[in-house]
Length: 315
Image (cartoon, rainbow, N blue to C red):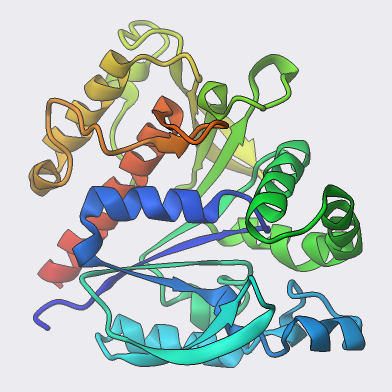
């Protein structure tokens, strides 16, 4: 391999939207160029053992963090790993999988930023922080439809895990370069994923695209649906990119043009006419629809991955 793999981290609580975001970014980059790793496969105990021990999957002691760190170090240097597989349907472990890193590696899961060694392995770190009401709705929808739980069982599981969420999952927000929050507008229920707004906290830990010339308060020609503001997150100054669920396809394409023009080699991944593969979500009746806030979020993260790839090739 002439260039080391670029590693993106996506961390958040259960049902925060990690897999949806991961799949979308992989589609933009080209799935043949992407290796996806889930750190939840590194559980120390299966579901029955966790119940007997009274420990949740969110607790660091329930996961082989040292092996995750070791595997991230190997992947970063282009080496293959033998990755465990946790089966969410059965609650047990399947045979391990031989994984060879592609040009891009996306690592998603609950505890991906838990150690310094793990954090140092990523080129870009993203944290998903939806409102708890929305995450609860997403988790009920996922676990009842795909994992065979009842709504009451899901709510009870979340209640038991809340202390570990507060102690071990949410604090990882501090290590992210980008914090992504999808939320319903005007205090809505969030039942319609296409109408969710997106708030992207852009920390100065990595260089972000120059957007002030199209999003300044004096001449924002993208309209009020997309705004760039100054803010504070966890007590530190940040830029905040707000994207309303009512953003139009033309506004998405305009922001896409800005990103593609800033990094020429981004053009092969997103066309200047608008990439129709980004922002795809499955509606309540099973149809495939497009969310523009999700599309712009995927595009911005892809921008950072490719920028990191360019820097790595130079180094």
